[in-house]
Length: 318
Image 1 (cartoon, rainbow, N blue to C red):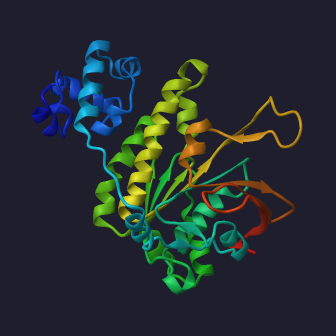
Image 2: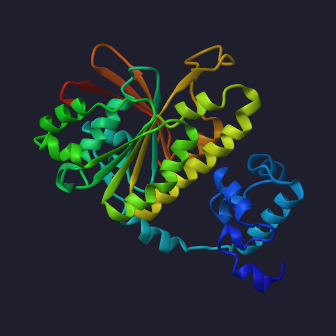
Image 3: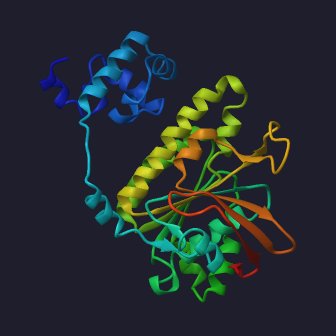
């Protein structure tokens, strides 16, 4: 393919050997951009999109050639980060653990066992983001992606009243999307940009990120495909967070690692994909009564440590 031809390759159909039918196959398999294709290997692309390996290699090579290597100076990135803001969790200690609250342009993951408080933090953030800045909010709306039918408007109403907000208005500002399976979840996030363009969405909540992937890709044989799709999924979330200066909060399920003989064997689902994708990772454990223990296990700039907070009828508190 000539370099002049490469420069005009912006859509899937511009690539050599990609007609309407092949483009549809690629999109159905989750490859919607040249960036998605350039990061693949031929065998995996051929299998995922049901195309010939030779064509897969040709497509990957052309997509790679078509992409320019872009860069920004450190000063430009610093200026971009000047617009980063934080949403209060309602607990000063938990906010301090996260460096001031849940950050925009970042992916914040809370993982833990059943009833550890993951969903409650998501509900509280959905209310708090609607507060004015002086009270720890961003006066923004929420996209709530519900993968396990956990969203409870009654709980949102209770939390809104505790903050002195109009519960009807708070619920009106939360756009709830119920997920049927992992492909549906991927599609919702890819189409979410349409909503972000129209509404001042400052928080995306996914409760939980991994449950549908875990159900749809059971067994070791499907692990590779699951991780590939999960990888593209979280990269889409990060792109939206950066582009629209939005915070992304997601919960994650856990399992016990049989290889850990001493200490806590609990590890989050998602493996290295989520370990690298999440900006902040917090492990939640249930303590006595309303108390919860939060441990920051990964952050680009903050130390690993623990704090205790409470989940009560009025929400998240110290």
